Amino acid sequence: MTGERPLRVESKPCGPATVCLTVSGELDAYTADDLANRVREALLLERPSMIRLDLNGLDFIDVAGVRTLYDLHFDAAAVDCTLTISQAPQTTRWILNVLGLDDLFAVSARRPKRAETVTDGRRRRHAEPGS
Image (cartoon, rainbow, N blue to C red; front, side, top):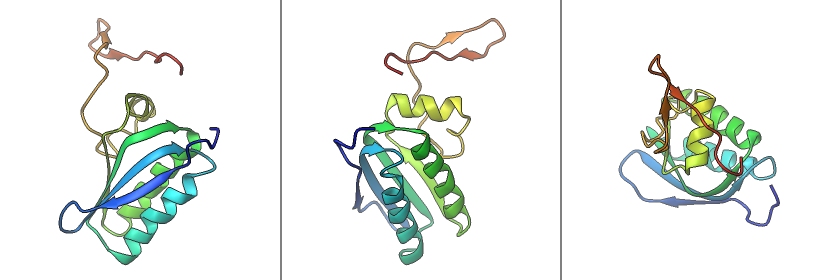
């Protein structure tokens, strides 16, 4: 977005065969390679069965960021690793849901509180303020 808050990726302990990466800042065309490099490095050096991306501190994500998450899912799957997303901000969860990618990443089941239901039982999606 603006590059004012660059992407930060920090490792934290979270159990055997699991790598937890805390991601904060902006995940966009300028920073997506930083996340991709960290995840691929973990796949190569640590050979985990799961990588959990904690996106609680993520301020912004653009299409390049979403595409990077998508590509990393398949990179992980190629070496029998599961890539999951936890603590994603509401806007990020909404974007992944609209694109049909929330199940791909096993994103938390948290949903926006104000979901309308139409007569056929499907949830109607609403744009969030500022989107």
